[in-house]
View 1 (cartoon, rainbow, N blue to C red):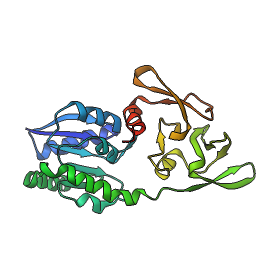
View 2: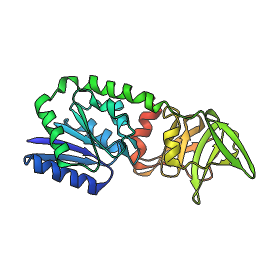
View 3: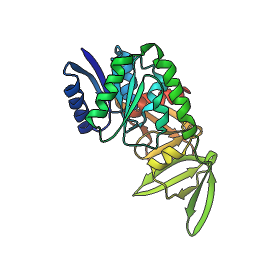
Length: 254
């Protein structure tokens, strides 16, 4: 039996990928199809590791590399991504392969062949560290200031001044630690990649918050967390269910 886990936030893409895997490996068994960083962390904590993981990089609640900062994968990983800007050379470490979307059967076949030939389970943890180290220089392009607007004026705000960013009525704003709100052209997806992840976390589709802005946290329904911010936010700020596990790990400095 060839046991696989797929980490992919687009269900049709996950189904198509497993169909291709079954075409190549008829005895393949799909142990889990996971859609987010948090669900992958939870599943990998609680279940025996598969033979091979196929993982997209950009997920709904973050980047899949974050999963393997918290969890030793225990098996080789094949990254399947449409984002060729993600340090492709970094994926060439031993026991790790990559495939660009749309997935071609011959490329998938080559990745599985590499796994069959090598199966270097003893070096997975070491190689994942190499991958993360190789990715870090790419990730260091975080911005130290942003151009913002208030009325007819334009100014710059230093990153450390930002308490949180949010979207409201299709307009994006950032609020500084003094409670002043500014409009910003970048959307939250862009800001998420521009802000240093050790200091900022996207708690849901509407808000990215600074760890320095958290004044209180309360348990909420369905495993969610209600976060109270200082300065106070204009909306209720609740960590979404799918982001809760990653949020708690972020708070813990992992």
